[in-house]
Every structure is written in structure tokens, then in C-alpha cells.
Length: 332
Image (cartoon, rainbow, N blue to C red):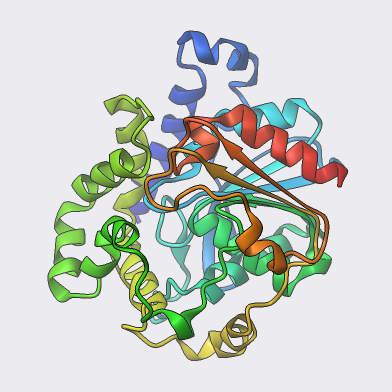
């Protein structure tokens, strides 16, 4: 309990400090300093989810979903700006991050795509939100894609960085081009027990390397990184991360509670809701494309854009582009 209290308090202080930081690029957000100063907790499915919320209850809802190894601070500029534009914004910590914890110590620490997709829907249920725009990148983009594909009645629109992110696990043993495989070094590392121990011992160092390699043009400072790195001290972080990468590459089985969802995802379902997909032109993990390769996976209106000079953590690197995408998908 002391550990959870520390995490709770730290996360609150982190967001206060970030939003009120007196740098020129944040000057226009000073009036929004009170929006993300308190971490809330709510029981949703198997989790106690830590999340930030702002905006009027009756406003259209946007759920902002972060990736790995990142946290809610990816949206520290996006969130307040969307609130100013009339949205109610929900920013949860994904399982294994920040103050999000499992309610039962016996619950398997799954990181598979079905789990994070269902987490999103169960969070909406717990908050009594009928539908929302789902917007995310990396793990968060995958959760958004899963939710949009399997629960389209809950999704008013999708913003996804790197397009269609539902994993085709049946084809996970097919190699990608060598330069792409090189960028997946951490995924292969986590298949081993050495990798599990390495993540437990060196989680901050691994994340820092990934930040640099994923976003080679992003000049973040040490303070920015350290603020997010506190979210990786979650006691379930290692187990969730390791299972996520082992499952997607065939190195671990999924858990029984998610069999039905995984069977639906195995057919690579088409996303029927309006969608805006984004690629960072300098993404060090997934190379930018013109979107045509995934066009058949979107059955509704879909717009694809490439953002110049931006890497993998697109909402934090180019918040204006991400905000524009949310507003655009709402109009489709």
C-alpha cells in the first residue's frame, strides 16, 4: 500500500510539474494547470485503473491511450488543448504502468492485445461512457484498433499512429526486412529469461535507449524522460511487458479469459468506424507509408497523413498534428 500511495502521489506531482513548466512552448497551457493534477482510480474489469480526466460531463469524449515504454505524459499538451476545444478527455495508464494495478494478485499479468483492448471497453463501462473517440499510438493504438474493430458501437472514431495495429499472430514467424528486424531487438530480447531479468534490472536504461532509437529527431531532455520513467516502477510492469512481446511472437500462450477475443482478432477484422491514421516520417520503429498497404482494413471513411520530422511518440513530439487528427476524425 505504501508503494501504491507513492506511485499515486508521484504521478500527480509529475503532471502538475509538467503542465506548469514555464517554458515558452507551454506558456499557453498555464491556465489549464488544474486539469490533470489529480490521478483518479476506478475498478474496471480485473484492474484498478489510474486515469486523468478533464472536461464537461456532457461533452464528446476522447480516450487517449499511450504506448510502451511511455506513459500518460505523451498527452500532456494534447489533453488540455482538446479540453479547451470542448472535449471531455480521459487519459488512463495502461495495465502495468503508473497507478493501474490488478485487483486480484492471482490474475495472470497478461499483456496480449485482447487484454488491452478489453481494458478499454471495461473502462468505458466503469465510467458509464456509452461511446468515445479512441486515439492512441503503439500499445495504445493497438488497444484503440481492437476496440474499434470489435466494439464499433462504442467508438465514434479512431485515431491510430501506424495505421492498423491488430497483430496477425499466425504469421508472427515470418521475418520482416533486415532493417526492420533490427529495430525489434527488444522484442527478441524479451523472449528470453535473460531479457526478463534485464528488463527488471534495467527498465529505465532500456526505455531511454528505445526513446532515442524510436524517435531519432526528438530532442527530449532528461527531466522529460525521468517524469515518464516513474510510471515503469509499477510492480506488474515486467510481467505485462514480457507477456505482451512473447505472446505476439508466439513465445507464450494467451490466457483463457481472452480466447474468444483473440479468435475474433485472428481473422484480422476490418475497422468500420471513421479513422484518421498517422505516420511519423522519422519513426525509428515502423517506417512511414502512404497508407495503401492497410487500406483494405478500413471499411469506413479513412484519412492517412504522414507527419514530417516526427518519430514514434507522435502525440508528444507533434501534439498539434495529433489534436488536428482528433478534430478531423470527429468530422468524418
